[in-house]
Image (tube, rainbow, N blue to C red; front, side):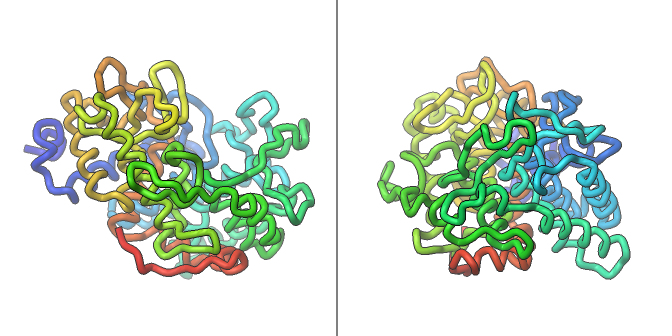
Length: 423
């Protein structure tokens, strides 16, 4: 009996490593076989049957895709040369995309690399998308450290993209204010969205602080991201203390996207312990789901931003739309391994294995049956590959944390860094 047949018939009997291999491999294929054939850029979404659904490419998805390619290389699914060729192609096409004081837009066209407005007035730089892209680029640069001309050029090209990002511009000239999410040539600062915690954007502040060309002031972090400490929570939910963020934690992507690259183990600053935060956030999300009869009966959990039966929404314990997104639990493997494994086996068995398709798990489903998401979505697929790999080997955490920009940013913001914690 092959692995695919076993997955459908008896997922509970397969060793965890075999299950994780298959999940990572199929999800990796989203970024390898499912990317744009000419530019190598991964599409924002694909249909559940694997076929193309849109021409749009999200910059955060490109960052996650770069990390997935590195995982695929380490696991032998593609050769080092194949990986290098694809990543060099991606970087080449990123240079074709417009930038706005060095920041990329949220979306570009997969063929032309022209800006696709995310909304009517969101047609310029998106600093958070740029930071999530930079995570993947920096990991790739650190991975390809060889002496060949191709690897040396890749490192130079990636460093230049980072150095040309004018993080300071996005403070609007204020050393005592936040970074701002958007800027547009047509609409200036009209979006007026400060980047404040707790959400997915911690890496934006660390990378901005670590820049040697356009660094922000540490005070931008304290007044912007932490709001002078106002992002501290400290309350307990279902018996778990949550260090930061909104009541009950919010959707799980907030504690996952930055930590695909940024290692939370032993990461602390004056406000608290970031390992405690990511573990607590996942546990509260899990424990809330145990209170919902439909989720409990199906042995599933995980609320985050995903497709829902009538669109797309950020699901959380305070705004539950009834849809479980596999990425939420699977991307929690480093933080809640036992609970994540239980969810994985339930996802595999659900509806006779029909959640698990040619490019991994579909985006979401309702545990009562009757609805399964019609797509895979890149920002949900990427963290599955990255965070499962960090659970297994720490690959991406190790690459990112050794980068000089990251070390500078953490030092300038007075973070303590260590690896005393484990999953």
